[in-house]
Image 1 (cartoon, rainbow, N blue to C red):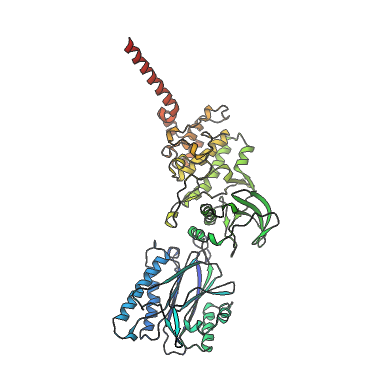
Image 2 (cartoon, rainbow, N blue to C red):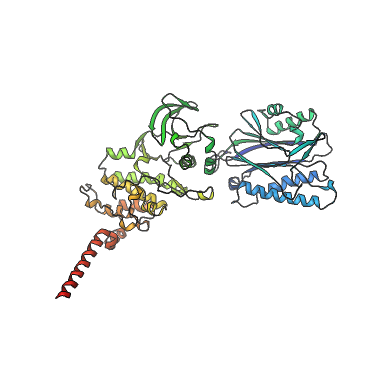
Length: 585
């Protein structure tokens, strides 16, 4: 495992820190800063990494204590907040408490010089997002692509040749705190400075000094401080530098948040380029999306680029589903699940960079093999279940498993290649999820409970897999083909399973008990269905005695609802006729 990877080999958040602080021409140093990258993976996940800087107000006799209290208490208290609080809520609560304490300390004395006042600027990096909380005239800068951008606003005004703070910790009982967030990239460099640095060095000089490479961050910060001192700084000098060296996979809510910053590419043709990719073949071009085979000029590898259509540029739900597919493909790491790669750094476009899987779809294989041997069907079932299980272990439900979403590569390996309709269990904890008005997916493969009750779980995917197996064996669907979700029976009891034994052309060389297995796997009511994939696999090889016995004991109303009501109606008719004859005789 590499230093910047977690136990699963995935990239994780990693930062480098370096800082320098000196009293300068003053007798004491009233600045303070601190930084921390938690070692525990769970803490990084829920709280991120923190860097903060404070500048105690010189006119206060407790300036040094105020700045030190602010940074040390913030660091300890922030990481003590509940995991279910978001960054802004956690940080604002802690800073508010620190402000109240400093205010109380400063106002317990009637002497103005006894105030506990300090500026405060904090940078919290969690996943791919930087959160800034700020009050006063200390600053946070971002150096990206050799351009330095000031991210904070000074809360001060000039008067009589002096600078006066309008906002800081400890001035008022209620603190008006600035907050902003931005997406971070690997290679970003953040600078946190006090006014002894940025009031002395102009923007151009600070940019050049901060852009130094080849030196440690502490050496860069020290050099910035020394240049400021030589340039005549008359205040304490502090500079804290944070380098972003590695980032984890973005959270899905972060992808949603940054969708509006990306452009949808126009339809492309062979030979055109986008970022580092050159289009070599148009695989699909439709009203919903465009799919291309492209060569990565950096690696010379072939990739599949999937792009949304401009027709959906204003469809938030569609774009979020597109972003969710990218997140899933990057988060899952399995040899039978198509990999989706991170987009090129700094790309302005919305598209997914996918693994190129050479082979044929399962649909094409089924067309080429209309009457496969049962052993081959079993092998394909085993192969399909492997990637589906990987989804379920990751708390995901596919919802749209169908032959078109599996590819058999040249080595015979079955890969799952589409994640656009996936349900991510627990995503509601991250971002609100819109309830689908109509079920997503192919109406002939999605489970009845999804259509009737809009509810899915792993058993819903089992139903879809069983539908594929049924079609593989018979060339038909287990229930009447449906053109729209509105055409579906709205009660489980009204779904009529088509026994493979009663088809016009029953499949040859298929044991009759296979129908019993398929009927259970395709039960409309999920309570009567197999509860795990392994049971379905096992019974398709050798049906259990329990299954055979239960098939014989199932009430007629469940085995054949239509026949039950036909028999019931006939009996009722006989009773009515008998009573009528008795009455008139």
